[in-house]
Amino acid sequence: GQQLNQSPQSMFIQEGEDVSMNCTSSSIFNTWLWYKQDPGEGPVLLIALYKAGELTSNGRLTAQFGITRKDSFLNISASIPSDVGIYFCAGSGGGSQGNLIFGKGTKLSVKP
Amino acid sequence: DGGITQSPKYLFRKEGQNVTLSCEQNLNHDAMYWYRQDPGQGLRLIYYSQIVNDFQKGDIAEGYSVSREKKESFPLTVTSAQKNPTAFYLCASSIRGSGTEAFFGQGTRLTVV
Image (cartoon, rainbow over all chains, first blue to last red; front, side):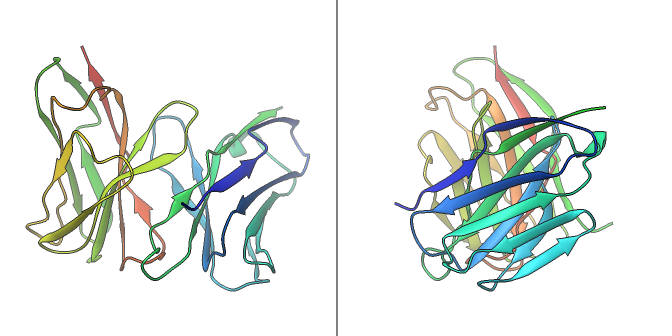
């Protein structure tokens, strides 16, 4: 079945630093989504990508749909303490394989 | 406010008992989903429904059951057949199935005592 690898598993950074994380899939995806989850809460959608090569920003967050359609990247610029949480990527191949597949998450810790 | 609501937030169950988790959405979304999340793990799909009166098993459906009698409601029953039910359960909905943006509820933490 489809597999999705997310890295890194965790990051511990200083406030103000930039952050990069990525996801790769074993097959082509038509949709890439990035979510953030705070402890004990449901994931919140950050960015949605629907086109290969697409680059989309949401404030300090920027995500890209890889040109091969098998990967996606999320960057956070100038991190702040409230960026702490777990970031998940999710992808979908569309059609009959349309259910979202989630990565295992990147846990971000920010040191003031 | 439009959104997706899960209840209760915390739930305790004795071994051998069935328990039902509630999920309601007023977003007029066709598709609804149930996921299970264990510590340090991603989200694993239990069941999904793309239309009223129809639902499909996900990757880990054993020991769970669902119904979709109304568009806005998709309750999940954790049965006594589920060997390791303690987990964080997340409900989501999307406008339609097939990879559209999914929006999540706040989750229900189930603990078996």
